[in-house]
Image (cartoon, rainbow, N blue to C red):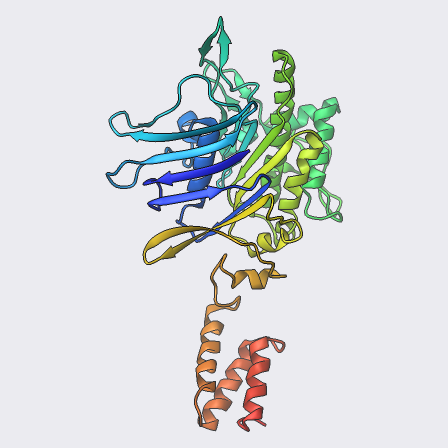
Length: 426
């Protein structure tokens, strides 16, 4: 599991340091402060390759560069298969590269990275690790499987023209025809990742969507009884399909490769997930983190799981309250203070509901109201501080508040109570 990151003069801040929890890690902060950047750094620290370095078609996952002209470094540590791996990489400006230790890197287990734009990356210790011949390390294996959004669905091509991965559409259809373990595991994963028990994600019958497309197309059975092609499903459903497929594909291929190499399957699985709530309805946001923690149990009972995820969602934060354990989980928050990006590990305090998370340190909003209504409440609050306001002003403001706010709004209740106590309203 990834234990530690320490950055100096790289990224949006001069210095950042994180001590990760061994199970669940949440990163919050405004856009542009470095959440995706930290996930890229985490992936690189575990695999020593930048996603866009492997697949040049990616628009995300680019190599991190120093800030300014001073020396830059990335320090990290993680639990490898045999020992704790600790290393500090320094940026070599002439070579335009980050230094690495000699010899084979440590094995962090199976690493899975879901980027916010739908791109994905998988590092498999059984397929991407260097092999040894007569005691000499040979780096001729593909360094990782890195997919653009379309390649997740249509297949990942190799340099020799042979597919590295058939893609979601072909594999799902093939698994469904065979009715073997991969399809059963995919069905189980989809069920765990469903938005609710009343609306399970259940595969329907295979179909064709075009005279010009000879592929058998998987479908999903909708709550209203119809089967629709997965390519016609909502963006939220497609994101879940992609997550479920890549998890099952990665694990199934990892098991086969482990058998061929005579090794045990990985005992650690690390999820890096950017904007975990992306495209998901609030009902789904309330389920996704618990589901991701449990979906691995459908793959294997033996592996430990670590999740590191960035989120903009108050619902996500509220949904993890029953799970959060400070002994194995952590929350990191990025803020802009005096034009500087500051990273803090914050104590996780329960707020009880999403609306209260919205006004917490995680999101720093004054309220969950529309901006116009928020300004109206501020004006009304200032009016209450005047010793003898004009009754006409009070009545006019009262009319605006009644029109704008819900009848059960806390501020409206307080406004009426104070005004009546002071004799300003009847």
